Each structure stands twice: as C-alpha cells, then as structure tokens.
Image 1 (spheres, rainbow, N blue to C red):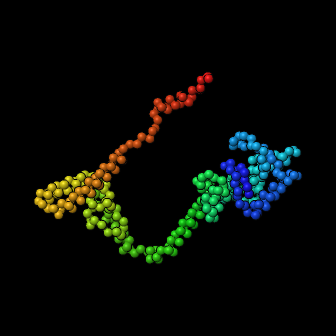
Image 2: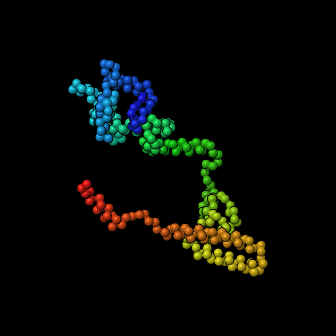
Image 3: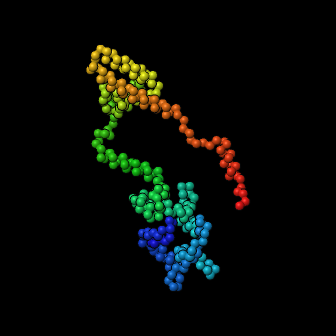
Length: 294
C-alpha cells in the first residue's frame, strides 16, 4: 500500500496482508467514479487548522448529492457501533472504547512483541526517531514476567547444575561471616566474597578499603605514626624497613586525599539557578505590560 503524503510528509510503502488488501480494494471500488478514478476532495486539517489541497481521500461519502470526506466524528461513531456489535468488553465488563489512533499503538505493540525488529516498525509507522516507536510499544506486566522466567530457564540450562543446589547451613554461615569480617577499624573491606586478601591484611595499602568519613582522625594518626617510624628507620639505618613504610605512607596519603575530596563534595552547595523574588517580579511585570503603539 502506497501512502502519500504520510505523517512526516514523505511517501511510504507498507506491506499489507491479502485480507487487508481485499478490504481496501472494496473501499476503493465503492468510492471510485464512473471514469475509474477516485474523486479528489478538499479536507480540513483540525490540527494545523488549514484546508488541505484536493486529494483522492479513501474515506468519502455522498451526502446531499455531493461527495464529502468523512469527518472524524463519523468515523468514531462507526467505530463505536462496530465495537458494540462485536461484544468485546474490558475487565469491568463495559464495552470497549477505542480511538482511531489506538489501533496504531496496538499494531506497533503486537508487532514488536511478536518479534518484529523495532527499526522495521519505525519505518512502517513513519517515525523519524526510534524512541517515538518504542514509546508506542506497551509492555504488559505478564509479558515482562514471562520473558524473565524464560531467561532464567535458559540460563539455568546453560550453567552447571551444582550452581543451583540447596545451600548447606555451613556454607550459609560462612557467607554471612564473610560480611561480618569486612568491618575494619578504618571502615569496610570491599573485596568480593570468596576472594583472598591480596595484601595480607595490610589494609592501608589495599585499594578495596572503604574508609569512613568518621575515621579520618584515625587515618591521620596512622599517617603521622608512619612518618615517625620512617624517621626512626632512617636514623637506625633500617633500609629494608624504610621501603615498606614508605609504600604504606603513600597509600595512606592517597586515601586521606580521597576522603577529603569526598567530604568537600558533600559539604559543597550547588546553585540550581533559582530566581530571586526581584527577578520573578521583573519578568511578571514585563510580560504583563502591553506593547506600545508602533
């Protein structure tokens, strides 16, 4: 089916089923004149508030001896009569009520849920951006739940069965104990469950250490203590110990700088640009003042 002009003022070619093509052919044959052509009519665009140039409109009827395009009210009344005759009802038992645009949304939703790629649905719908097309597609809660269950089933079929066995009380206790042992003097240990300590519990050097802001005085105390021990090692000539102490001091100073930056960000206030009362009054006064004579 060739559509010109379409929603975006561009010509489109849409594939239709044989059943829909038969319906459209019947409609065309009813409005076709004796010369075999569809009469061209002018119609009023209620959105743009302008009269369109003469076009071979698909929905037109003869009234009072003259051909006129079917109005939106006439199409909606015919749609309501058809839905009432179908006997379709909603969850409350009331007859379904649709607007003509609702069928566009239903078509896009059903097409995408049945596997049609969204970018193909975008071309069929005539949307400039795929985000508009995805906004038309309604994902129902039942579909989301079923899709999630199907994903879990596929994942379990690919993974070893031992990963889904019942956890023993011993394993569960070990799992909880891991998080209990993450509490440190300076904060928390952020290493993942089941991993060993890479720094042999030298927490000041470990990047997984999460220092709490309340423990800043303790971290400063540790840094000062490292400085004192480095001076003592240099004085006593303990060259082998100086290197380890210097590494710990570097990491302690890095963590202290990161903690200070974090604290300063929390204390900073961000100006959101809220206008003052004087600015609001000035804008209101300027908007209310009528323009002067030219």
